[in-house]
Amino acid sequence: MAIITISRDSHSHGQEIAEKVCRKLGYSCISREILLEASEHFNIPEIKLKSALHDAPAALDRFTYGKERYLAFIQSEFLDHARKDNLVYHGLAGHFMVRGVAHCLKVRVAADMEDRVNLEIQRENVSRDEALKTLTEEDEERRKWSWTLWGHDPWDSILYDLILHLNKLSIENVVDIICLTAKMDRFAAVPESQKVVDDLHLAAKVKTSLVMKYPSCTVNADGRIVGVNVVSDITQETAIIEEIEQLTTGLPGVDEVRVSVTPHGF
Image 1 (cartoon, rainbow, N blue to C red):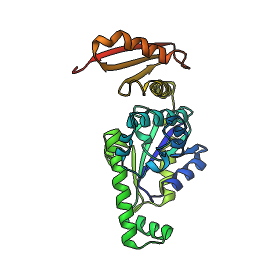
Image 2 (image 1 turned 90 degrees about the horizontal axis):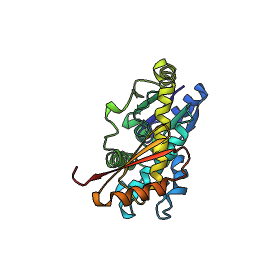
Image 3 (image 1 turned 60 degrees about the horizontal axis):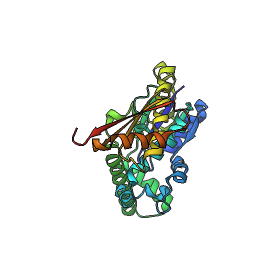
Image 4 (image 1 turned 180 degrees about the vertical axis):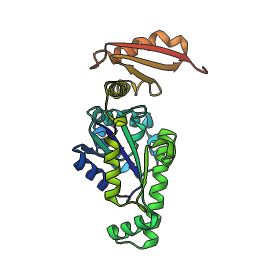
């Protein structure tokens, strides 16, 4: 079975589509509520992750390693769910967090601006100009998040397996297409692709234990062996290796941590 991520702009029926896909396939459905789970570990009371989605990503820069901590915990929480498979995620950046996972179906849903404006008017009882202004601002904020945290425009077609337009397809059409595609052998979870998810999950867990001390470190996993790379002064190599080994000792799923230090400028 597959992991399905559904990306969309606000008021593009993403939640409705995700929930209908889940009912049809018998999958679990999650959204950005996982951000609230992550906030328990983020441990910065001033950052309210739920409302932070509507603030510029630069807001994270007010806090020590805000961007790095945010990414570390968000990815860890998301992958906690993703490794269980049979999942539909609709929300922020799910498709970025499962890059390289063969059994992930990445979907982008598009709706006409006029339809989105009418929905905003109905929901918020505002004028057309106010609705258009709100949606335009939200679209720009989502684009800023994507560029700042992931280095991609969310409308880059290379990020998705399917891009479905609601101006030509009904919601039921979109649900049917997603379900039919997810059932293809191409998106079946096989041991090799499940291992990719498990490795991503373990690497993300290890990163959360290191992010305060080594916010820019890169972490990868292969089975129960974890690799950590730190860019730093090479004269500090021994001390860095010892500290990382201490920080990662006893972490579940980790048998060995291999630390490398790359000199600045390389």
